Amino acid sequence: MDSEFDLVLDSAEFFFNGKVYKKCIGLKDGKITKIKGLLKAEKRIRCSRKFVLPGLIDVHVHFRVPGQEKKEDWQHGSKAALSGGITTVLDMPNNKPSICTAVELEKKRAIVEKKARVNFGLHFGVSPKHLNEIEKAKNFAALKVFMGSSTGSLLVDKSIEQKKAFSLAAQLKKIAMVHAEDEGIIRKNLIKAKENNKNDIRFHSLIRSVEAEIKAVKQAIALQKECGNRLHVCHVSSAKTVDLLRKEKLENKNISCAVTPHHLFLSEHDAVKLGNFAKVNPSIKSKADRRALWNALLNGTIDLIASDHAPHSFDEKNTDFFNAPSGVPGIETMLPLLLNAVNSKLLSLKKVVECCCINPAKLFKLKGKGKIFVGMDADLVLVDLKKEHKIEKDRLFTKCGWSPFEGWKLKGSVDSTFLSGELVFDGEQVVSNKKGLELQF
Ligand code: DOR
Ligand code: ZN
Image (cartoon, rainbow, N blue to C red; front, side):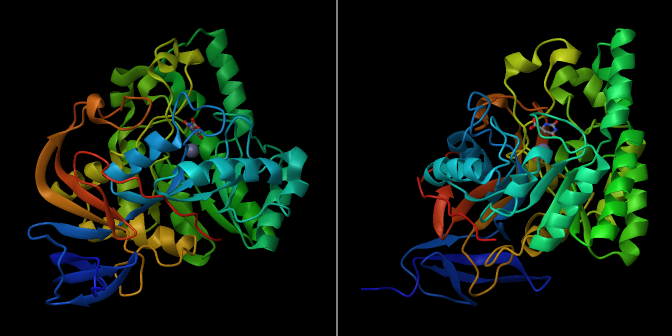
């Protein structure tokens, strides 16, 4: 007999129009089909004392395919995502080769389509030499603009080229997502640091300085005003930056920004202990900067939390500071860290849902995502706010096998994850090989 539901989440607590409800959520054919006090079904999961969230949407990940599969791939990355309650990822284009031509985008899509076990979208990289490729490229999430160089060879540091990129974004109604650090300032600082043999993580925030971020963000805002595109500033890291964005956003509704878990939870003090395992661009800054990021998150200046999951192998990191690549993994630790922060009263669970589900879905116009509502996709995560656990490298799914949060004791964990209505992560293991679907933009 064809039953009304494939699965019912029984007595689930969840946010519905901003308020907490406790009801049954009926799932059928990958969708949420009914929400009611009581629903009958053969297959049901008791959710008492757990909270159901919409599957998280991480708009900034580096799954390293093609070209750097030694650091990460979609098999490991998908598992890491699902174990962290993330059911949709948008992947960055700084691959080998860079994804800055229509042909490379299609080649990447062909691989990812087969391997993704999480819903996905792909970003397109802006390269000054290949600006004409932007109009040819099909179905990409946003245009990624590296205003300063980071991992990979993508770089748009001349204002004339940045302006062209933003104009194309406006024309194609795409978001320009900027890595905002000024290339000129970074280079000058790096040369100075090398001359003085400052080969130590302590100098990273002086090389990748607040000034470098501020200059680039100012430039991005000025160009956005000229071009009229939507602008998203990735991974803000300093008090001055969020102050500038707060003022600008009062009047300008075409600007959004995100923060990463590593900028929220780490400061320079931790970086000194972690060494290159906290080398990341933009740099981790002072405790005062970190405090300002939290304030900006709470007052709505910051719209999204995105992991910027950027794995590098242990060996690559385990070298001298100048030669170590920048980037830290973070996709599977993001939600547990945030749940722990909820328990510590640093933010509300509602804010987590806003910044990790609702706002990413709104910004990228993702149909069926980000909310628990009849008709939405049944991408869901059950969280246990009371469960205590420890971040341990042996239990991580990322291929790089380490975390800057190793050993952190947290309260609040992912109980299980559902992708298109199917249980895919049971709290310990990924238990299904269900394919992820590509989003349409
Ligand atoms: O630290 C970083 N790592 N920042 C970036 O912008 C890129 C990322 C990576 O891909 O490794
Ligand atoms: Zn990134």
